[in-house]
Amino acid sequence: MQNITVIGSGTMGNGIAHTFAQFGYKVALVDIKQEFLDKAIATITKNIDRQVVKGNITENDKQNILKNIATFTNMEVGAKNAGLVVEAATENTELKLKIFRDLDKICKPATILASNTSSISITKIASATKRADKVIGMHFMNPVPLMKLVEVIRGESTSDAVMRIIMETSRRLKKIPVEVNDAPGFVANRILMPMINEAVYTLHEGVAGVEEIDTVMKLGMAHPMGPLQLADFIGLDVCLSIQQVLFDGFKNSKYTPCPLLVNMVTAGHLGVKSGNGFYKYVAGSKELVVADRFRKN
Image (tube, one colour):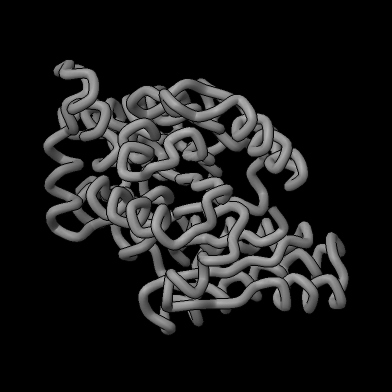
């Protein structure tokens, strides 16, 4: 279990790689293009520099963390020696099933295959392999190096031994693992995404504006971030994808994605990642400004 492979070098993938490397694990970070990997290493380096400035780690610690991470564009090379693989690719069911089919062929029989999926059935993902007992959900929160929670999702066939290993591994990362059973959205997103979707409906129906909705939830419910700002931070495309999983899984109209959310994703207004969502984002600026289409005249 000292050799960890992370599939996908985006926001979640590079955060997971950073966290494992910080605790002494040897990490193989895999993605389809070297430019994606280079960007991930730059992000990890920037985040580690913040830790150094805050005095949480030393410059020597920084160098050791970076030495613990190797990058690969070939999944077979990057995953063949892993004791644990954590998949953190795009939240797309067919893509994840393909990755797990490939990993099942590449990896050693004892290798545990984990998914960082935020909503897709672990049982379904496991069905793409011949090692369903060794497939598990390991849902980290963003930003991974800072957030303590890991949702550990037991699929229908996940073994008790694998559950114990992943719970203990999470604790070694100084995380707090919570065991949950396989269901659409698990716990975190089954509760969070309908709230975000309802906030979008509240805006869509003209009940209140962007700032007003977020202010009510921050000041009235003690949320550190309003639901619309949080949606921008997560990515509106990700929010829509998870909400669709809930709708498909429960067959209940209460999970219907808000048309405004659908339209914003279709238009490419994805939040922080695109520079425009419910708020607009300018590189280097910390000022929170409502997007032009939602500003009052």
